[in-house]
Length: 294
Ligand SMILES: C[S@@+](CC[C@H](N)C(=O)[O-])C[C@H]1O[C@@H](n2cnc3c(N)ncnc32)[C@H](O)[C@@H]1O
Image 1: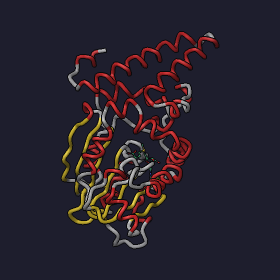
Image 2: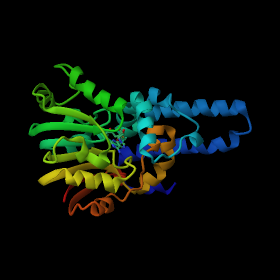
Image 3: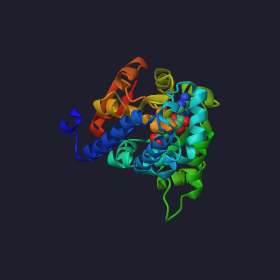
């Protein structure tokens, strides 16, 4: 695989070497179809590899690759995330992939730019909540999946002096009743608020855009919710060599399979009316970190 020659950093190379091993196992599956015994043996080896990549409980969700289908409808997405919610963090937080690509530092770095009244799109289980800084004055999280968002809300009840499941700044806002969660579709954000005058200084989205079935519509809806001078913060998958190489691995779990790795995020932002866009490739170009405003 020519990817070996790319200078994309030691961590990413480590990840790719493991990925290459898993791809080579996937290729072996073709020769195992004729034998049930060998198929079981392949499944258990694939589960073992999945455990390394994803952690044990996500690996338990493992299905044969041809049963994991890319999904685009919002109803399907809601169902997949409701069903996968309990294992989501194994994939996006605890897995070797997210550690190798240092998702935590990338989240922290992005969130350090948040201030004022904040709206987070596709908040999921609240993996960003520990990193919101002082300077945030209120927080609203939106998600289509009840089971994902329940976990985000639970973080506020669980956070204490010894376990910080949300940042001290958000914890204080929660006590002041300035934290809210809404179940709804990011395509129609204004409908989630009682008054059209509700606007935000910062809108955040991490790993959501690649899942939203209509990303331009979602971004346009977000743009309409920004105050003048407000900003959109994104950490997202984008079209990249690594994304192309990793694309088959999305089939390892249904939640991962909802995610597109080949979006042209800058083009999506242009189409949604964002004129000022600062972007930086991170994780060897697999992800992009963006600060944008209309
Ligand atoms: C890959 S997860 C990202 C979660 C979180 N932002 C993170 O960084 O871990 C995508 C989230 O977007 C939510 N989602 C997908 N489509 C949505 C939509 N149209 N409206 C609201 N939420 C949506 C899913 O339910 C899921 O929680």
